[in-house]
Length: 108
Ligand SMILES: C=C(O[C@@H]1C=C(C(=O)O)C=C[C@H]1O)C(=O)O
Image 1: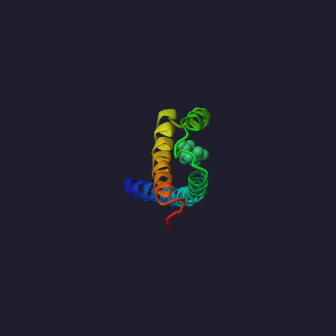
Image 2: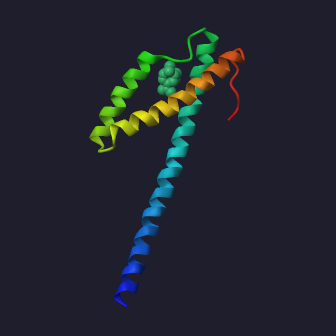
Image 3: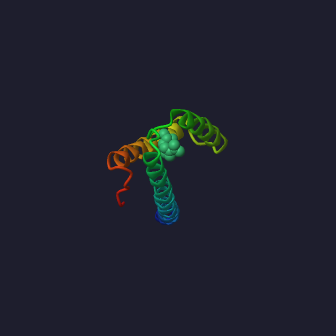
């Protein structure tokens, strides 16, 4: 009987955590969409002025900063670095694509 009650309580807690996880995932998607909206504009600017798609010096600064932020927030800095590199690789792919199209961004 008390095991049933414990299981019910566990299910209630699980549903509460999952509801927060769903909200956080939605926020992440919106934040990523906004970031890519910005970086696509940067890609158009770079293509217009003949600047290279990638900027390794800027990336090094961002990684150093994000590693520090992650550490302060008790998030694994190696994971934060991998995540940023994953996002930046996709941004650079967009920039190369924009440059190859003469500075025109693609929708989406
Ligand atoms: C957005 C830029 O282009 C590239 C993408 C970056 C990013 O996604 O943060 C950072 C540096 C560049 O390699 C930029 O130069 O600022």
